[in-house]
Amino acid sequence: MSEDLSRVPVTILTGFLGSGKTTLLNHILTATHGKKIAVIENEFGDISIDDKLLQKNSQFKSDEEIVEVLNGCICCTVRQDLIAILNKLRQRVRSGKLHLDGIVIETTGMADPAPVAQTFLAHAKIRGFARLDG
Image (cartoon, rainbow, N blue to C red; front, side, top):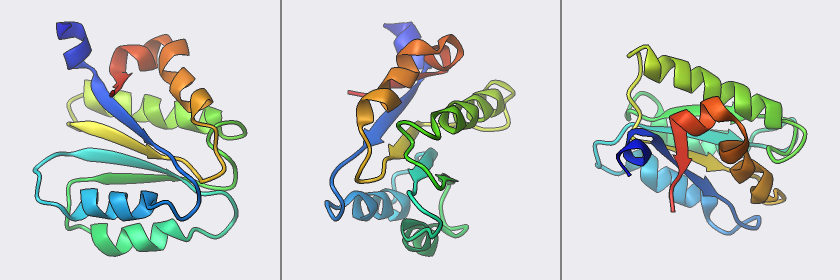
């Protein structure tokens, strides 16, 4: 149990297009909760729509860190990008340069969340750093 608590909790935020994922992220970014949360946002296509909405509420006003994965579904074509991003966060946390209370991964409305969740079970370094929350 104590090993589980030492790992960063990860929430996968998924839902159909228009279901309110970005609205929830905006609330997380603007709420006064004192938590340091990394947000990994998946955009499918060349134009980032959600990024503009998130940037409006997070420009230097919060402790959250936003990472955007563009041009592919995070559950398939850019899964290696997700692993690379998580490894970079892991290295920054381990070095003491970054403290994280949590990570939120927003998938595109077309994504299957199962492969994203599997990332936290199949990769030893990531499994040692982060855990699925709930």
